[in-house]
Image (cartoon, rainbow, N blue to C red):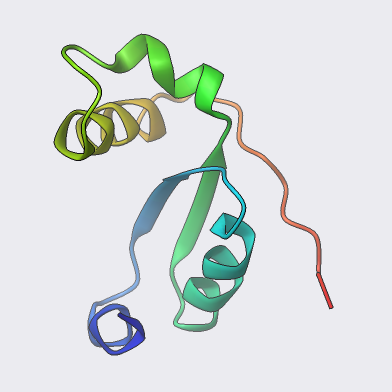
Length: 78
């Protein structure tokens, strides 16, 4: 997956915060991307249908584009 993201021009990537999200956020930032992690409770209102990967991705895309969406700050993690 790293090869795919390394080949993309720098862009905004929205992710729902979970156990591995901080690791991936740091890794994606090394490729020059801007990563915005969002708490699941802030993404949930944007889910329009049953909970599945496609609906979650659409909701995250909608939420990350909102100027008022609060993100989660990533720590430096060791």
